[in-house]
Image (cartoon, rainbow, N blue to C red; front, side, top):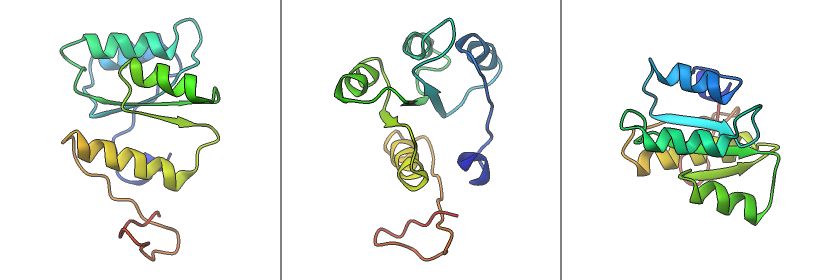
Length: 126
């Protein structure tokens, strides 16, 4: 729960249908989803998110154990801002989230390193 540790209000859904229920009452700035979900695929969920006037502005980042250029191309073509292959590197993941939130004007995510020593770009991961 890297994002919860960074102070984000995190909601969890285990299926696309659960995610759609959550989105009925919650308007996130960011949606992290797996492309492989039971019953309804993550790609179809992205299409629902991007088709809705209530959620289309959310930054969507896909994560998946399905790797390769084709998986990334399909995810980006479906409306995802980024694609992160599993296993997830925590520093790369949080930097990707922070960059895409900032690029979309959807807020800022402060990330910190265990050592609390900033790297070259000033980011740290806690």
